[in-house]
Amino acid sequence: MSDFETVAASEDPNARRGPSGEPNAPNQVGGTSVTPGRPRSLAGDAWRDLRRKPIFWISSALVLVVTAMAAVPALFTAADPADCVLSRQHAGPSGGAIFGYDFQGCDTYARAVYGARASLLVGALSALLTGLIALTVGMLAGYFGRWIDAVLSRVIDIVLGIPLLLAAIVLLKRVASDSATVRIAAVIFVLAVLGWTTTARVVRSSVITAKEQDYVAAARMLGASNSRIMWRHILPNTLAPAIVVLTIALGSFIAAEATLSFLGIGLKEPTISWGIDINSGRVHMRESATPLIVPSTFLALTVLAFIMLGDAIRDAFDPKLR
Amino acid sequence: MVRFILRRLLQMVLAFFGTTLIVYALMFAGQGDPIQALAGERPVTDAQRAYLTEKFHLDRTGIDGFFYRYFDYIRNLLRGDLGESLTGRQIGDILAAAWPVTIKLALIAMTVTVLVGVTAGVLAGIRRASVFDNSTLLLTLVVLAVPTIVLAPIAQYLLGVRWQLFPPTAGADPDFYALLLPGIVLGSLSLATALRLTRTSVAENLRADYVRTARSKGLVKRRIVGIHVLRNSLIPVVTFLGVELGNLMGGAIITEGVFNIPGVGFNLFRAIRTEDGPLVVGIVSVLVVVYLIANLVVDVLYAVLDPRIRYE
Image (tube, rainbow over all chains, first blue to last red; front, side, top):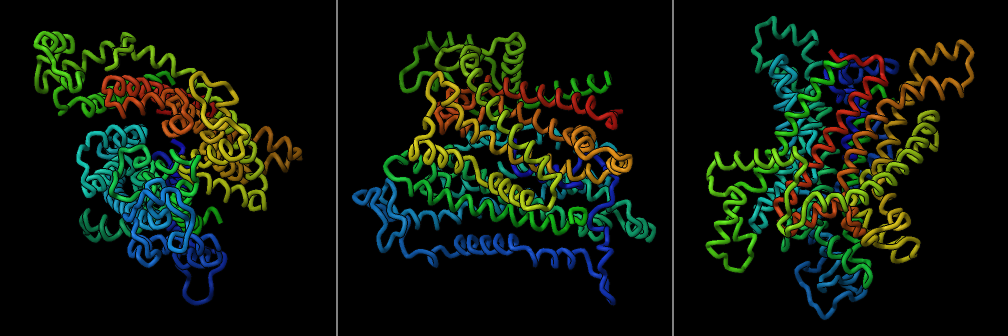
């Protein structure tokens, strides 16, 4: 599937198949421009780089706005998204509703604002769950190697080979309940179960590089247990690349949720989702296009913001790309 | 090399059984009464029930019965018999009718990807950090981030309904012109990915030692880029395109749905909506085989193209 993760994986030297043996990004020091006194850390370097990028600021602002929209939608609109009156079907913009009304006579803008919550909830929680699975699997495979690595890597290969949309359709088809909570939980679970592989590969390769470092050997010589080495020494060094991949994954999860809801198997009414609204807007686009365009714009901008943010952070953290 | 191919084939067989088993289990396990589901609201007579139970081997229950039916299904599948959908049509016939359309659409998308994506990617890679490079990077980021469920309806609305440059829907037996807009929409995603891959790969190879050597030998730039760099940097792109072609063959559910194109993805989606279990399992298992074969071909091609890659 040509989603953003394919590109991310191909451009990220840490995400290559198998141990590449290349020095990992977090261990390279910026080198040329060390200020006198305290040498800058990689994170400090990345921050200096990020501060100068307009894309970083634009995407952060968008992410902030959408998060605020999801938390307190009443800040952005006074209208009630459930207040639908058929007599104002496809009515034009007015004082209260700046983008007019949709087929059911609901306020188009209010529905788009309230749709942020479901999207962000699904995106954030699936990214979190993905992160947990990926960190566990990647850490076990990378740290212990041998047959554990062989088995886990094959599992990753197989899950990676399953087309996401097809599998999600088959899995979600099994969820009969129409309760909003159950459906949201099901979508989160399905996305995480199918989407953890890329992150797990990234974690695995950074664990492999990290465990060869001298400080790990030193810790082992001092008698540190496996769990202490993994938890205290290796984990902090694998977190940065994993978080970058997860930010991008969050964007694609939001897109995936909307796609599933668009097809009618993800979230269902009365949950407000951009995917559902885009689908109903599409059906009636000949009568009025705004109910299609408004949620489409909201969805596209949100996904774009997360992906751009992740992309900018990754560029900043990767000294090879500078 | 032979050993590698053999091992890959073995892996492929395992993946095939694993995936079909999962799909089969999800579609059929824990289902209510399939015979009643087939009949809908109408009553089922005892004779009909007995006949159908016998025909679909439903008399065996539990795990034993499930595996019995699964292996029965696999046996038929290997013989090329995909069975019947719940509407009584041969699944093989449905696929035979849908596939040419999907392949046509996939080829249009592929052509767009190769012509625009790879060319622009090479240019962006050579002129790294130029205005062209930066604007293509931003543009592809936007294309990658905009989901198909936004891109397809908006393109349909603007180009099909508003400005009427293309037919808004394809319908039965579509011609090339009707498939052009869906093809471009479908290809835009792979285009952006291919562009970025090519760019990164070209830019990386331009810094390689052999390029420095070629330059110091006094070769002209066109030859360095056209022969040395291009040959090496297109390897990941070829891999990607192969996998992508496998994906596109599976049909694009959203694009085919929005533009009403009677291809494989469209049929699959309709089968899911109408709860046609046998049809879903039939299409998905064929798609899995296509996907696995595409992956195998790409892996072998990879080894042939790049002498540095040695398996074993």
